[in-house]
Structures are given as structure tokens and as C-alpha cells.
Image (cartoon, rainbow, N blue to C red; front, top):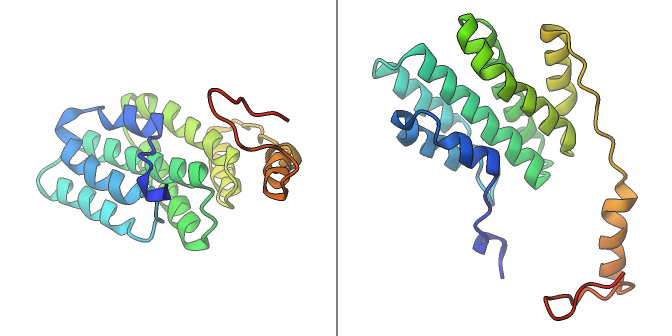
Length: 183
């Protein structure tokens, strides 16, 4: 089975896709380029074009903010879920988060209160991923919100040790329902 055969779904992206149903046609475009599994974030500019089209059609500030937050959720969750290590991808994710964060924090209080928890979640998601943008995102949050979200430390040996053992044949990796994995 090839990677492109998988229908990978990120729960946050899927759940937040349905916020404000009038925006779904724009969110569909944003999701396709912001969470391009499999793929990369090389076409993220199309997400900006979709948001601009919404704005040009007389879209509300609230709708623009929702689309920006959703685009950030797509990109940051994509980077975390796929461990995309392309520098262009994480720079695109960082830039999108910075723009989104600035827009939210410059919005009326009700929009800040509505979207700040989602942005905070992205800081946590970024820290749990393996790409280099997490420090910038963390620092932006700390500087603006004054909250230091502790970095999640991972034990790479625990994560990659079993994988290496499987590749080397040290662990029986022929597991299924009738034959549970043995370690």
C-alpha cells in the first residue's frame, strides 16, 4: 500500500473545518494546500489567495480571522503529523502563524477570546513536532501572552529504538489481530 492510499485525517483540522459552514468552500481550498497529506506546504500561497478572495467578496473580519486560524491549524498540524523537515515548509508554517497571531491579537476582545485557545493549542502542537518552527512560535506566544508553555521533551530512543530494531529484524514486526506484536 502506498502512502497516497491512506486517507489520513487530523482530528483538529476536521473538527474545525465545520466551524462557520458559510466558509467551507474557502476552507476546502485551504485544507487541500495547508494539510497536503501526502505532500508539502509549497502551495500555501493558494490559501492566502482563498482568504483574499473571501475578503474581496466582502467577507467579514470575523470570517477572515477564522480562515487564517484554520489555515494555521492545517499547516502546523501537518508539520507536526508528518515531520516534514523541508525548511521552506516550516518557514511557511511559521510565517502563517505569525500573521494569524498578529491578526487575532489586533482583533476585538470577543475574537481574541474565541481564537486564543486554538492558537495556544498550536503552540503545544508545534512543540510536539520535530520541525524547527516550534521555538519561534513558542517565543511569539511567550512575548505576547506572557505565558511560558513548557517544551515537551521526547525520548527519541523510545520512539525510534523499536523502529530501528524492526528494520534490523530484532523484533518480530509481523503483527495482526491474530498475531499481536511481540517485543
